[in-house]
Amino acid sequence: MLADITGRTIETVPNTQEVGAMGATLVVAAGINKTDVLELAKKLVKVVQVYTPDPENKAVYDRNYEVFKKIYKANKKNFT
Image 1 (spheres, rainbow, N blue to C red):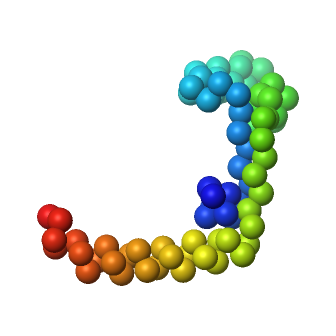
Image 2 (image 1 turned 60 degrees about the vertical axis):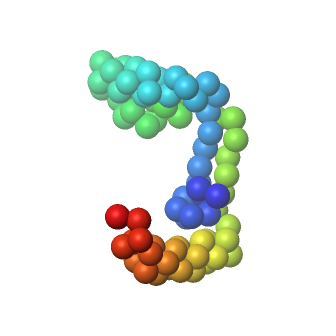
């Protein structure tokens, strides 16, 4: 769903509860080694699953988002 909505390829990694610490570690390691952090991440972080966007689904999500914005605007006063 996220890939379809954003139109970008999404990769998942193991142990998602530790991604913040892993990201900080990669930034420090890249700084010490004077390398690009994304290149270093590609070498060191295992990708578990790859999700590619489906353009047909994006059209549906975009249409429904427009409907949501109209409904939200119409109902906002009822919930504030």
